[in-house]
Length: 106
Image (cartoon, rainbow, N blue to C red):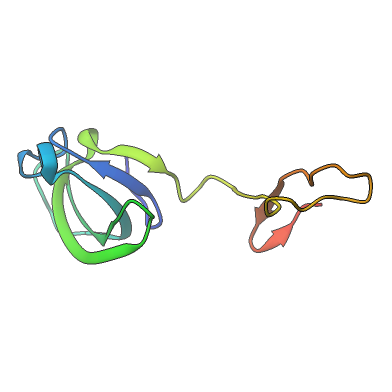
């Protein structure tokens, strides 16, 4: 797996022993390092996320690509959902719409 900026990963022991057990973290990538490394390893710069998805710390980590567990892909289309309780004139909830480059496809 090749990480890209915007991807969100669970980083645990499979990525590096330093992230085993309670030291595992949720990490949003902002930059993939271009420095030469060992085969299968990569430098990532990004933010550690709390349970709510808020960035709490900026870090640079050295991990094995194969050990990263993808949670959210930056390349997947975003889905915009209507706020809870929002309904159309027929009394039905609005269907989710796919958003691409900031535009609704509806």
